[in-house]
Length: 250
Image (tube, rainbow, N blue to C red; front, side, top):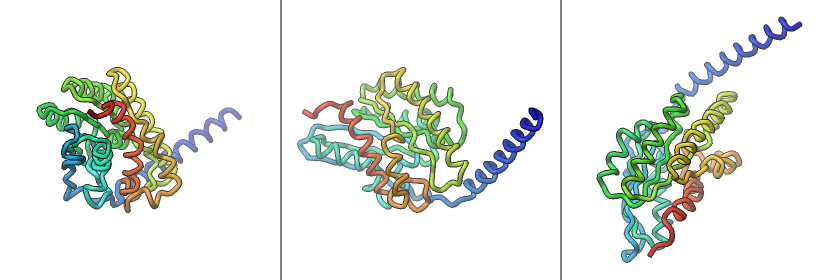
């Protein structure tokens, strides 16, 4: 009986592995939104007499606004408008690059910010570390280095966890496995944030219910990247953390 149970369990695991393997191939072959031409994320927001704020947003395709038809729909722009309405004169610089992982932010994006006297830095990355199976220890160590160096600029720093990785574009059980992996990567980012004293936005926890309830509204046409409405929900989740980091203007 025990032997038969073990054989059945092994057979089930093999079958599951085959199913997941097929779903990974389908996910890789699926057409996603084109990354070029990239949106130019930047500009000036808020009243002319507002308190100056040099705001930098680093990260992956979502930081680059992929899924929004124009830069106005990107969450970096939405956050800048919110800051402007609260009295800051925001100079936004978006440095996000589609496909970026945590290591790429450390090696390629952060040096651009370090030499430019930032006041506020937001880092939103991790989804590609989920899909590329970056080791969790590497995610944590690289993120710790990013946050330490970002703080060393004298800027206020905020980091987000991964979004909910249970993308509508993928089939089950791959969708659920990606969700589990996303939570693990977020935990690694959370540990790095805790070590450096940087606030972390629990992005998946704050926004996943909206995407699950109405995926057609909150996802873009590839069912993977957020739509303008999806980015607006992200901005709502992130903004309180920026405000708390900055304190009141003036």
